[in-house]
Picture 1 (cartoon, rainbow, N blue to C red):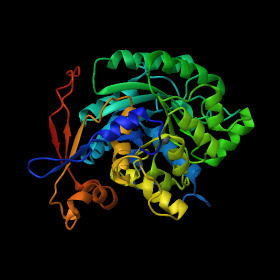
Picture 2 (tube, rainbow, N blue to C red; picture 1 turned 180 degrees about the vertical axis):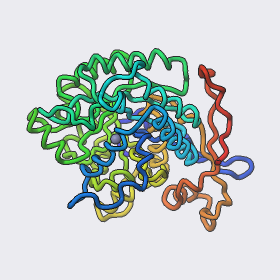
Picture 3 (cartoon, rainbow, N blue to C red; picture 1 turned 135 degrees about the vertical axis):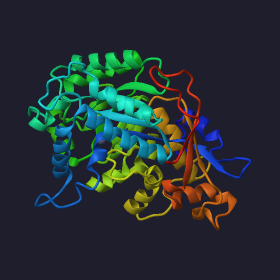
Length: 416
Ligand SMILES: [Zn+2]
Protein backbone atom coordinates (compact mmCIF):
# COMPACT_ATOMS: atom_id res chain seq x y z
CA UNK A 1 0.00 0.00 0.00
CA UNK A 2 1.09 3.57 -0.45
CA UNK A 3 1.04 4.34 3.20
CA UNK A 4 1.27 2.52 6.48
CA UNK A 5 -1.95 3.83 7.96
CA UNK A 6 -4.57 1.77 6.20
CA UNK A 7 -5.66 -1.40 7.92
CA UNK A 8 -8.49 -1.80 5.44
CA UNK A 9 -6.20 -1.12 2.58
CA UNK A 10 -3.76 -3.68 3.98
CA UNK A 11 -6.46 -6.34 4.07
CA UNK A 12 -7.61 -5.45 0.59
CA UNK A 13 -4.10 -5.59 -0.77
CA UNK A 14 -3.70 -9.20 0.39
CA UNK A 15 -6.40 -10.42 -2.00
CA UNK A 16 -5.33 -11.51 -5.47
CA UNK A 17 -6.94 -9.11 -7.88
CA UNK A 18 -6.48 -10.86 -11.18
CA UNK A 19 -7.78 -14.44 -11.34
CA UNK A 20 -7.50 -16.81 -14.32
CA UNK A 21 -10.66 -18.80 -15.10
CA UNK A 22 -10.34 -22.42 -16.33
CA UNK A 23 -11.10 -21.22 -19.86
CA UNK A 24 -8.20 -18.76 -19.66
CA UNK A 25 -10.32 -15.63 -19.16
CA UNK A 26 -9.13 -13.01 -16.70
CA UNK A 27 -11.39 -11.85 -13.89
CA UNK A 28 -10.95 -8.62 -11.94
CA UNK A 29 -13.11 -6.92 -9.30
CA UNK A 30 -15.90 -4.92 -10.92
CA UNK A 31 -15.28 -1.20 -11.27
CA UNK A 32 -16.85 1.57 -9.20
CA UNK A 33 -17.31 5.18 -10.29
CA UNK A 34 -17.82 7.24 -7.16
CA UNK A 35 -18.92 10.59 -8.57
CA UNK A 36 -21.59 10.84 -11.27
CA UNK A 37 -24.11 13.44 -12.43
CA UNK A 38 -26.07 11.15 -14.72
CA UNK A 39 -28.16 13.87 -16.41
CA UNK A 40 -24.96 15.49 -17.74
CA UNK A 41 -24.68 12.49 -20.09
CA UNK A 42 -27.14 14.46 -22.27
CA UNK A 43 -24.47 17.17 -22.73
CA UNK A 44 -21.94 14.99 -24.51
CA UNK A 45 -20.65 16.82 -27.55
CA UNK A 46 -22.63 19.97 -26.70
CA UNK A 47 -19.96 21.99 -24.86
CA UNK A 48 -16.94 21.56 -27.11
CA UNK A 49 -17.25 24.79 -29.13
CA UNK A 50 -16.42 28.33 -28.01
CA UNK A 51 -19.28 30.21 -26.33
CA UNK A 52 -17.43 32.99 -24.50
CA UNK A 53 -14.44 35.21 -25.12
CA UNK A 54 -12.54 32.99 -22.74
CA UNK A 55 -14.15 29.62 -22.00
CA UNK A 56 -13.59 28.01 -18.63
CA UNK A 57 -15.36 26.02 -15.92
CA UNK A 58 -17.87 28.81 -15.41
CA UNK A 59 -18.91 29.11 -19.06
CA UNK A 60 -19.32 25.31 -19.16
CA UNK A 61 -21.46 25.57 -16.04
CA UNK A 62 -23.80 28.00 -17.80
CA UNK A 63 -24.32 25.46 -20.57
CA UNK A 64 -24.94 22.74 -17.97
CA UNK A 65 -27.52 24.92 -16.21
CA UNK A 66 -29.57 25.32 -19.38
CA UNK A 67 -29.72 21.54 -19.68
CA UNK A 68 -30.60 21.17 -15.99
CA UNK A 69 -33.42 23.75 -16.36
CA UNK A 70 -35.04 21.74 -19.12
CA UNK A 71 -35.15 18.38 -17.34
CA UNK A 72 -38.41 16.58 -16.68
CA UNK A 73 -38.77 13.38 -14.66
CA UNK A 74 -39.02 11.52 -17.95
CA UNK A 75 -35.92 13.06 -19.52
CA UNK A 76 -34.02 12.67 -16.24
CA UNK A 77 -34.82 8.97 -16.31
CA UNK A 78 -33.90 8.60 -19.98
CA UNK A 79 -30.55 10.40 -19.62
CA UNK A 80 -29.74 8.45 -16.46
CA UNK A 81 -30.57 5.14 -18.08
CA UNK A 82 -28.32 5.91 -21.07
CA UNK A 83 -25.54 6.97 -18.70
CA UNK A 84 -25.82 3.93 -16.46
CA UNK A 85 -26.08 1.45 -19.33
CA UNK A 86 -22.87 2.90 -20.73
CA UNK A 87 -21.20 2.48 -17.33
CA UNK A 88 -22.36 -1.14 -17.06
CA UNK A 89 -20.93 -1.93 -20.49
CA UNK A 90 -17.64 -0.43 -19.36
CA UNK A 91 -17.43 -2.80 -16.37
CA UNK A 92 -18.91 -0.55 -13.68
CA UNK A 93 -21.03 -2.27 -11.05
CA UNK A 94 -21.28 0.59 -8.53
CA UNK A 95 -22.06 4.26 -9.11
CA UNK A 96 -22.12 7.14 -6.63
CA UNK A 97 -24.79 9.51 -7.92
CA UNK A 98 -24.23 13.02 -6.55
CA UNK A 99 -27.79 14.18 -6.99
CA UNK A 100 -28.59 17.89 -6.85
CA UNK A 101 -31.48 18.48 -9.30
CA UNK A 102 -34.36 18.05 -6.89
CA UNK A 103 -37.28 20.35 -7.66
CA UNK A 104 -39.25 21.85 -10.54
CA UNK A 105 -37.48 24.44 -12.67
CA UNK A 106 -38.78 27.40 -10.60
CA UNK A 107 -37.72 25.72 -7.37
CA UNK A 108 -41.17 24.44 -6.34
CA UNK A 109 -40.87 20.92 -4.93
CA UNK A 110 -42.69 18.12 -6.72
CA UNK A 111 -45.69 16.72 -4.84
CA UNK A 112 -43.52 13.71 -4.24
CA UNK A 113 -40.41 15.58 -3.10
CA UNK A 114 -37.90 12.86 -3.95
CA UNK A 115 -39.34 12.13 -7.40
CA UNK A 116 -36.17 12.93 -9.36
CA UNK A 117 -33.93 10.99 -6.96
CA UNK A 118 -36.27 8.02 -7.26
CA UNK A 119 -36.19 8.03 -11.07
CA UNK A 120 -32.38 8.11 -11.01
CA UNK A 121 -32.30 5.14 -8.63
CA UNK A 122 -34.80 3.30 -10.82
CA UNK A 123 -32.60 3.91 -13.86
CA UNK A 124 -29.53 2.57 -12.07
CA UNK A 125 -31.40 -0.57 -11.00
CA UNK A 126 -32.73 -1.02 -14.54
CA UNK A 127 -29.17 -0.86 -15.88
CA UNK A 128 -28.04 -3.47 -13.34
CA UNK A 129 -25.93 -1.10 -11.25
CA UNK A 130 -25.63 -0.73 -7.51
CA UNK A 131 -26.16 2.92 -6.67
CA UNK A 132 -25.26 5.19 -3.78
CA UNK A 133 -27.73 8.08 -4.09
CA UNK A 134 -26.02 11.04 -2.44
CA UNK A 135 -28.75 13.61 -1.83
CA UNK A 136 -27.00 16.95 -2.11
CA UNK A 137 -27.66 20.02 0.00
CA UNK A 138 -27.60 23.28 -1.99
CA UNK A 139 -28.75 26.70 -0.83
CA UNK A 140 -27.09 29.67 -2.51
CA UNK A 141 -25.00 30.91 -5.42
CA UNK A 142 -22.10 31.71 -3.12
CA UNK A 143 -21.22 33.59 0.05
CA UNK A 144 -23.73 36.44 0.39
CA UNK A 145 -25.37 35.64 -2.96
CA UNK A 146 -28.86 34.19 -3.37
CA UNK A 147 -29.42 31.35 -5.79
CA UNK A 148 -29.46 32.34 -9.45
CA UNK A 149 -32.56 31.42 -11.51
CA UNK A 150 -30.71 28.44 -13.02
CA UNK A 151 -29.93 27.11 -9.55
CA UNK A 152 -33.40 27.29 -7.98
CA UNK A 153 -34.30 23.69 -8.63
CA UNK A 154 -31.21 22.57 -6.75
CA UNK A 155 -32.01 24.60 -3.64
CA UNK A 156 -33.74 24.14 -0.31
CA UNK A 157 -34.47 26.97 2.12
CA UNK A 158 -33.56 24.97 5.24
CA UNK A 159 -31.12 22.15 5.94
CA UNK A 160 -33.97 20.28 7.65
CA UNK A 161 -35.71 20.00 4.26
CA UNK A 162 -32.61 18.26 2.94
CA UNK A 163 -32.43 15.84 5.84
CA UNK A 164 -36.13 15.00 5.61
CA UNK A 165 -35.61 13.99 1.99
CA UNK A 166 -32.64 11.82 2.97
CA UNK A 167 -34.86 10.21 5.62
CA UNK A 168 -37.59 9.57 3.04
CA UNK A 169 -35.15 8.06 0.56
CA UNK A 170 -33.59 5.84 3.21
CA UNK A 171 -37.02 4.63 4.32
CA UNK A 172 -38.10 3.93 0.75
CA UNK A 173 -34.99 2.04 -0.35
CA UNK A 174 -34.10 0.20 2.85
CA UNK A 175 -33.95 -3.48 2.11
CA UNK A 176 -32.72 -3.13 -1.45
CA UNK A 177 -29.17 -4.49 -1.25
CA UNK A 178 -28.20 -2.60 -4.41
CA UNK A 179 -29.18 0.85 -3.11
CA UNK A 180 -27.38 2.97 -0.52
CA UNK A 181 -28.57 6.45 0.43
CA UNK A 182 -26.04 9.00 1.64
CA UNK A 183 -25.66 12.71 2.21
CA UNK A 184 -23.79 15.28 0.15
CA UNK A 185 -22.93 18.91 0.72
CA UNK A 186 -22.65 20.41 -2.74
CA UNK A 187 -19.64 22.65 -2.01
CA UNK A 188 -18.47 25.44 0.28
CA UNK A 189 -19.83 27.76 -2.38
CA UNK A 190 -23.41 26.43 -2.39
CA UNK A 191 -23.73 25.36 1.26
CA UNK A 192 -23.46 27.94 4.06
CA UNK A 193 -21.03 27.10 6.87
CA UNK A 194 -23.93 26.83 9.34
CA UNK A 195 -25.29 23.81 7.43
CA UNK A 196 -22.11 21.75 7.80
CA UNK A 197 -22.65 20.62 11.39
CA UNK A 198 -26.23 19.36 10.85
CA UNK A 199 -25.11 17.44 7.74
CA UNK A 200 -22.15 16.00 9.67
CA UNK A 201 -24.37 15.01 12.61
CA UNK A 202 -26.87 13.30 10.35
CA UNK A 203 -24.17 11.28 8.59
CA UNK A 204 -22.62 10.31 11.92
CA UNK A 205 -25.92 9.39 13.54
CA UNK A 206 -26.99 7.17 10.65
CA UNK A 207 -23.57 5.92 9.55
CA UNK A 208 -23.99 7.24 6.00
CA UNK A 209 -21.30 8.39 3.62
CA UNK A 210 -20.84 12.16 3.26
CA UNK A 211 -19.63 13.42 -0.14
CA UNK A 212 -18.69 16.98 -1.12
CA UNK A 213 -17.07 18.83 -4.02
CA UNK A 214 -13.84 20.19 -2.54
CA UNK A 215 -11.51 22.77 -4.08
CA UNK A 216 -12.31 22.05 -7.73
CA UNK A 217 -11.61 25.60 -8.84
CA UNK A 218 -9.45 28.34 -7.34
CA UNK A 219 -12.28 30.89 -7.12
CA UNK A 220 -14.24 28.81 -4.63
CA UNK A 221 -11.14 28.53 -2.43
CA UNK A 222 -10.70 32.32 -2.48
CA UNK A 223 -14.37 32.91 -1.67
CA UNK A 224 -14.23 30.44 1.22
CA UNK A 225 -11.22 32.22 2.70
CA UNK A 226 -12.98 35.57 2.30
CA UNK A 227 -16.14 34.28 4.02
CA UNK A 228 -14.68 32.17 6.82
CA UNK A 229 -10.98 32.96 7.04
CA UNK A 230 -10.29 29.29 6.35
CA UNK A 231 -9.47 27.30 3.25
CA UNK A 232 -12.11 24.66 2.37
CA UNK A 233 -10.41 21.62 3.93
CA UNK A 234 -9.42 23.67 6.99
CA UNK A 235 -13.08 24.65 7.40
CA UNK A 236 -14.23 21.04 7.01
CA UNK A 237 -11.66 19.89 9.58
CA UNK A 238 -12.77 22.64 12.00
CA UNK A 239 -16.37 21.51 11.57
CA UNK A 240 -15.52 17.85 12.15
CA UNK A 241 -16.56 16.62 8.71
CA UNK A 242 -13.38 14.73 7.88
CA UNK A 243 -13.56 11.01 8.62
CA UNK A 244 -13.27 7.65 6.91
CA UNK A 245 -16.86 8.17 5.69
CA UNK A 246 -16.03 11.50 4.01
CA UNK A 247 -15.41 11.68 0.25
CA UNK A 248 -13.73 14.83 -1.06
CA UNK A 249 -14.49 15.09 -4.77
CA UNK A 250 -11.73 16.64 -6.96
CA UNK A 251 -9.25 18.05 -4.42
CA UNK A 252 -7.61 19.93 -7.26
CA UNK A 253 -6.55 23.08 -5.40
CA UNK A 254 -5.19 21.84 -2.08
CA UNK A 255 -2.15 22.90 -0.11
CA UNK A 256 0.07 20.14 1.37
CA UNK A 257 -1.33 20.59 4.88
CA UNK A 258 -4.86 20.11 3.52
CA UNK A 259 -3.78 16.81 1.97
CA UNK A 260 -2.46 15.83 5.41
CA UNK A 261 -5.78 16.71 7.07
CA UNK A 262 -7.59 14.43 4.62
CA UNK A 263 -5.01 11.66 5.03
CA UNK A 264 -5.02 11.83 8.83
CA UNK A 265 -8.78 11.33 8.75
CA UNK A 266 -8.45 8.40 6.30
CA UNK A 267 -10.88 10.28 4.07
CA UNK A 268 -11.41 9.37 0.43
CA UNK A 269 -10.47 11.68 -2.42
CA UNK A 270 -12.38 11.03 -5.63
CA UNK A 271 -10.44 12.18 -8.68
CA UNK A 272 -12.51 12.65 -11.86
CA UNK A 273 -9.65 12.87 -14.31
CA UNK A 274 -11.47 12.74 -17.63
CA UNK A 275 -13.88 15.47 -16.51
CA UNK A 276 -11.24 17.61 -14.80
CA UNK A 277 -9.17 17.68 -17.96
CA UNK A 278 -12.28 18.34 -20.09
CA UNK A 279 -13.11 21.35 -17.88
CA UNK A 280 -9.54 22.59 -17.64
CA UNK A 281 -9.64 22.35 -13.83
CA UNK A 282 -5.94 21.58 -13.38
CA UNK A 283 -4.11 18.67 -11.83
CA UNK A 284 -4.35 17.58 -8.18
CA UNK A 285 -1.16 16.76 -6.27
CA UNK A 286 -1.75 13.04 -5.98
CA UNK A 287 1.70 12.37 -4.56
CA UNK A 288 0.86 14.57 -1.57
CA UNK A 289 -2.50 12.85 -1.13
CA UNK A 290 -1.02 9.34 -1.41
CA UNK A 291 1.81 10.16 0.96
CA UNK A 292 -0.66 11.60 3.46
CA UNK A 293 -2.74 8.41 3.43
CA UNK A 294 -5.83 9.68 1.65
CA UNK A 295 -7.76 6.89 -0.06
CA UNK A 296 -8.02 7.56 -3.79
CA UNK A 297 -10.92 6.52 -5.99
CA UNK A 298 -12.31 7.58 -9.37
CA UNK A 299 -15.44 9.26 -10.75
CA UNK A 300 -16.95 9.68 -14.22
CA UNK A 301 -18.51 12.99 -13.11
CA UNK A 302 -19.75 14.77 -16.28
CA UNK A 303 -19.72 11.84 -18.74
CA UNK A 304 -17.55 13.83 -21.13
CA UNK A 305 -16.42 10.31 -21.91
CA UNK A 306 -17.01 6.97 -20.21
CA UNK A 307 -13.91 4.89 -19.68
CA UNK A 308 -13.22 3.91 -16.07
CA UNK A 309 -9.90 2.33 -17.04
CA UNK A 310 -8.83 5.69 -18.44
CA UNK A 311 -9.97 7.35 -15.21
CA UNK A 312 -7.94 5.01 -13.00
CA UNK A 313 -4.92 5.04 -15.31
CA UNK A 314 -4.93 8.85 -15.23
CA UNK A 315 -4.31 8.74 -11.47
CA UNK A 316 -0.79 7.80 -12.52
CA UNK A 317 -0.36 9.18 -16.04
CA UNK A 318 -1.62 12.69 -15.17
CA UNK A 319 0.70 12.69 -12.16
CA UNK A 320 3.57 11.85 -14.54
CA UNK A 321 2.64 14.89 -16.63
CA UNK A 322 2.37 17.11 -13.56
CA UNK A 323 5.70 15.99 -12.08
CA UNK A 324 7.57 15.20 -15.31
CA UNK A 325 8.55 11.83 -13.84
CA UNK A 326 7.71 8.20 -14.44
CA UNK A 327 6.18 5.67 -12.00
CA UNK A 328 5.31 8.24 -9.37
CA UNK A 329 4.44 5.91 -6.49
CA UNK A 330 5.58 2.59 -5.03
CA UNK A 331 2.86 0.58 -3.31
CA UNK A 332 4.00 -1.30 -0.22
CA UNK A 333 2.32 -4.38 -1.69
CA UNK A 334 1.95 -5.30 -5.34
CA UNK A 335 2.41 -3.21 -8.42
CA UNK A 336 1.16 0.26 -9.33
CA UNK A 337 -1.33 -1.37 -11.72
CA UNK A 338 -2.74 -3.51 -8.90
CA UNK A 339 -3.07 -0.47 -6.67
CA UNK A 340 -4.78 1.55 -9.40
CA UNK A 341 -7.27 -1.26 -10.09
CA UNK A 342 -7.95 -1.54 -6.36
CA UNK A 343 -8.69 2.19 -6.26
CA UNK A 344 -10.98 1.88 -9.28
CA UNK A 345 -12.92 -1.03 -7.80
CA UNK A 346 -12.74 -1.93 -4.09
CA UNK A 347 -11.85 1.51 -2.78
CA UNK A 348 -14.55 3.09 -4.93
CA UNK A 349 -17.17 0.65 -3.70
CA UNK A 350 -16.16 1.45 -0.11
CA UNK A 351 -16.45 5.18 -0.82
CA UNK A 352 -20.03 4.50 -1.93
CA UNK A 353 -20.80 2.55 1.24
CA UNK A 354 -20.61 -0.99 -0.19
CA UNK A 355 -18.49 -3.70 1.45
CA UNK A 356 -17.25 -5.36 -1.74
CA UNK A 357 -16.95 -4.82 -5.48
CA UNK A 358 -20.24 -6.62 -6.12
CA UNK A 359 -18.99 -8.65 -9.06
CA UNK A 360 -16.24 -9.11 -11.58
CA UNK A 361 -15.28 -7.94 -15.00
CA UNK A 362 -14.05 -10.54 -17.46
CA UNK A 363 -11.32 -9.91 -20.03
CA UNK A 364 -10.47 -12.42 -22.75
CA UNK A 365 -6.83 -13.46 -22.72
CA UNK A 366 -6.88 -13.60 -26.51
CA UNK A 367 -8.15 -10.04 -26.93
CA UNK A 368 -5.99 -8.37 -29.61
CA UNK A 369 -4.95 -5.64 -27.13
CA UNK A 370 -3.21 -8.32 -25.03
CA UNK A 371 -1.27 -9.93 -27.88
CA UNK A 372 2.48 -10.10 -27.17
CA UNK A 373 1.89 -9.44 -23.44
CA UNK A 374 3.51 -11.93 -21.06
CA UNK A 375 1.36 -13.50 -18.35
CA UNK A 376 3.13 -11.70 -15.53
CA UNK A 377 2.38 -8.29 -17.07
CA UNK A 378 -1.28 -8.82 -17.94
CA UNK A 379 -2.72 -6.41 -15.37
CA UNK A 380 -0.05 -3.78 -16.16
CA UNK A 381 -1.10 -4.07 -19.81
CA UNK A 382 -4.82 -3.81 -19.04
CA UNK A 383 -4.34 -0.75 -16.82
CA UNK A 384 -1.77 1.11 -18.91
CA UNK A 385 -2.56 -0.14 -22.41
CA UNK A 386 -6.28 -0.83 -22.72
CA UNK A 387 -9.58 1.03 -22.73
CA UNK A 388 -12.82 -0.23 -21.28
CA UNK A 389 -13.54 -1.84 -24.65
CA UNK A 390 -11.25 -4.67 -23.58
CA UNK A 391 -13.87 -5.77 -21.03
CA UNK A 392 -15.84 -8.73 -22.32
CA UNK A 393 -18.61 -8.66 -19.73
CA UNK A 394 -19.64 -7.80 -16.18
CA UNK A 395 -20.57 -10.70 -13.88
CA UNK A 396 -22.70 -9.51 -10.99
CA UNK A 397 -22.60 -11.22 -7.63
CA UNK A 398 -26.00 -12.51 -6.59
CA UNK A 399 -27.97 -9.90 -4.68
CA UNK A 400 -28.59 -10.89 -1.09
CA UNK A 401 -32.29 -10.03 -1.31
CA UNK A 402 -34.68 -9.52 -4.17
CA UNK A 403 -35.30 -5.79 -4.59
CA UNK A 404 -38.90 -4.73 -4.33
CA UNK A 405 -40.68 -4.12 -7.61
CA UNK A 406 -37.82 -5.55 -9.60
CA UNK A 407 -36.73 -8.86 -10.99
CA UNK A 408 -33.49 -10.28 -9.64
CA UNK A 409 -30.56 -8.91 -11.62
CA UNK A 410 -29.34 -11.36 -14.20
CA UNK A 411 -26.17 -13.19 -13.32
CA UNK A 412 -24.40 -11.92 -16.36
CA UNK A 413 -24.98 -8.83 -18.42
CA UNK A 414 -23.55 -9.52 -21.82
CA UNK A 415 -22.31 -6.48 -23.63
CA UNK A 416 -25.10 -5.14 -25.76
ZN1 LIG B 1 -19.52 16.92 -9.54
